[in-house]
Amino acid sequence: MDVKAEFKDIFDGHRSPTIGDVAKLAGVSITTISRVMNDRGAVSATTRTAVTDAMRILGYRPNSVARSLRQQKTNSVALVFPTMCDAYYVDLSAAVEMFVLEAGMQPLTFNTCLDEEHDKRVIDTLLNARVDGVICGAPLDFLPDFPFGKLPLVTMSQPQMDPGIPNIQCDNTESGARAAKHFAQTGSKQAVILRPIGTDHDPRRKGFQLGAKLEDLPIRELTIAHNVSPQKLEQDIARQLDQLHEEIPLDAVFTTADFFAPMVLKWAKDRNLEVPEDLQVIGFDGASFTQQMMPQLSTFRQPYEELARRAVKALTQLIQGEEVTVDTAPAAVFVPRKTTRKVPEK
Image 1 (tube, rainbow, N blue to C red):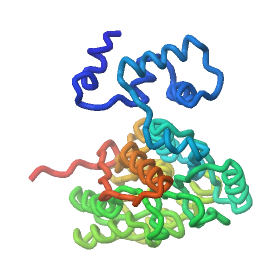
Image 2: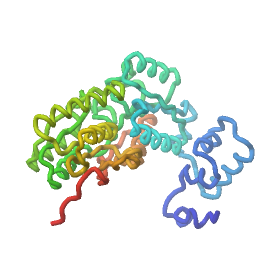
Image 3: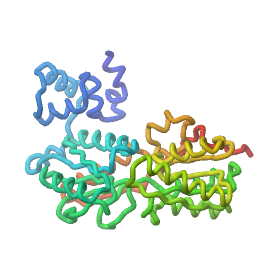
Image 4: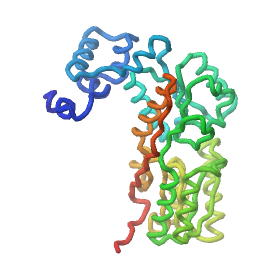
């Protein structure tokens, strides 16, 4: 490998090296880099030398804040996300883990499943691990007995429940409005927003409503329970779509999460509706699996890496007792694919 050519932007001083760069040069995983830096786990002498050489060549220095935390802290951070059946949370948790490791700390991942007894055990296990802080991507409603105020906490990708808790998310309202505008500009006359029960205050819903009003686009709502089996969920979505379609034929569906979109597309196929000619579908999250769907899903891609970076930064500030600075919410990017029509040129 021509190191200077491969990492030209680093050697030219345009950016600082990251833990990912060290892993690439050393030919090992990020987890192995973390083990070497924290002197934990079994690492061969050869691998350790390769890692330290890569750090020296690239001029990589572990985060100084994280190093200072090690003196009095466990240097571990709990990541709490809903069930990994939703690929969005797989992508998001991977991005958060990367930035936690980048900060020189150890991520411990916990999954909730929206079952009260299970989630109580999650909290017990989390507290027994004596973590320094928590990044939570699960609804706080489903975290019974969480010691609020005693443990540094940052929430992300959920509506803000408490103004005193830093909350990291993208501009959901703007994205919802853009979804409605796209439907209107491409000729849709009857749109539906599909969302989980209990999300009345979801900014994606608010944005979609505002956008539809501006575009004079009639919309209806479909709410579903999201703590049921995939089979039950698919049946419920199909039943409600049938009811709405029989009342007034629908020609556009905005799902507030990509997870629900395949079930909408299956419903359309079973009813001989052509996508996107008869029915347009837009998802939200930009989960990696949407590229493999047939047809490929048009969706709003959340800026995973930026959200993860901000969440880890905010938690580090909390752990250090510093004032938390949360920047303006970044925008999600609309990715038009095969489930929407093109906006006509003016």
